[in-house]
Image (cartoon, rainbow, N blue to C red):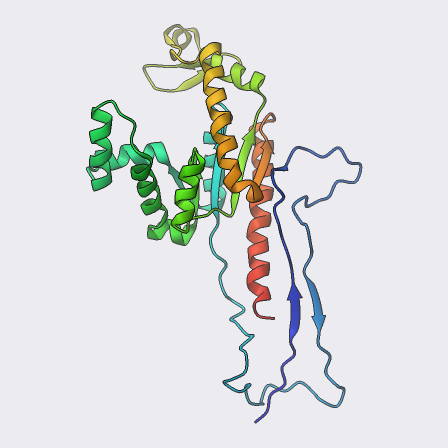
Length: 296
């Protein structure tokens, strides 16, 4: 039995330009999909008119190159790193991202505290350093993050790594373990806005709720009277923290510059998420296209 197969050639390409800016376009004819850098093209190989397509012919020789894969092959889950300065709105965006995409949210700080609480091997080592007043070595934190990223839920659902890595050496360590994100999201917020957001923050010691004197004021005078300000939520202290943050980000960008998407974080949280959503949607769709092209 012989079989003639119609092969569809599918080619596509996608490259995230370094630090792609996602601020609103002022063009009179904005591109409805600013991430779409190319469209897949399909070039059918024509059959001669006297050679009808038949599905009852034999398959190619076992020695022939196998160009067919299951059309239903599932694309890999998304792997995302997000970075942002203090008060950039990173926590809010992480919640919105995980709600829509179902990614496993992993914060290095939360992970460290959980490992210590669970008395894991890494947690015990970290606790020893902390009890001595020393910083936890990078190797221990990287190992914690690596093990969490490789757990079944992270592998099946994809992951959102929050605020880590913070140095090129930490990023390089993840690379050595074969761990690399699909996209590095950088929330870009002007310093003036960041300072205003931090200096105006207040904590309700009774409920633990965070307020802002301008953007999210307390509901009544009783709550307002008991609000406190963190000792480091002053203009002087926040500027020092921002300086450290910028140095760390510049360091990490040297590793992820080709997959960095810079998001305008000066706008309302809904508009910030719209930019992130567009970027992640495009990456996910592109992976489906690339998976489908393997069947060509």
